[in-house]
Length: 173
Image: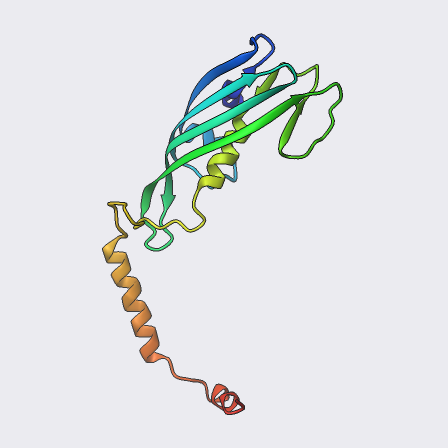
């Protein structure tokens, strides 16, 4: 977790206004998270922090590629992602929980760690069903693997015999 310290932004010395922070996110970032969906990444993260009197507004822009395995042919491919998110951190005298949408910072807080936010945004941007032959993408599913899957699906249909117990149930209709 020591490597995640680089993602802490000390806001106490910052003047009011906008400040830009750039980060390069690679495989070592996701190695810190045990159950991450993403293991390989080549991402650029630009964080625009706008400091105001009573709050911090963090605008995230994360783009690049993450390593995914195709759910269809099991080939590894680079999935492009482009994430735009905003997070608000509010200053408060007490640690009042205002929900997940707003981070509450007390007077004892001097920095904000954005590693968890970056992790969350990238994992949510990963496609639920990963397929390497999306429209417009030049890489296609592994032809040999697809041919094997088609052959196996064709063979299983020919050898399958119907169970006579189901035939009786079909007559009930």
